[in-house]
Length: 148
Picture 1 (tube, rainbow, N blue to C red):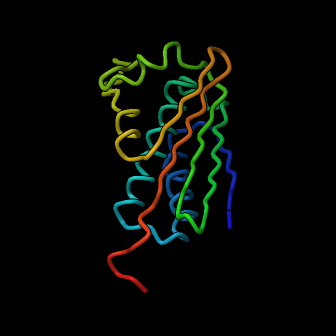
Picture 2 (cartoon, one colour):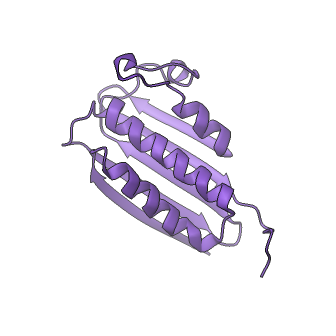
């Protein structure tokens, strides 16, 4: 059985925590471990922050779109975070650990590296002037430390 949700909100930095908590609350029905839930919250935070700062260049008129789908039997989660901002000039360059387009903001540029380390699969699609979509997939552990 599958379950899904969609969410959209203004590209304001204060909405990053709303997105993180909303996705985590939805995914909680799969009973992930605390580590898995923390990893999902972290990658959502990174992707939303990237959309706000880099995609929309902190323009609050931008809209961020999140969709989450879960396969309840397979314990698998897919999170898609999309913006219709400026897009990424060079995706491979942006995936480098210390790359940032905003060095004046003292950003470390580690967002994609963190996403790659915490998720099983990450796909980045971006077109200049049209925006970016990040798809994140995670397979949750099927046996919990405290089984029911």
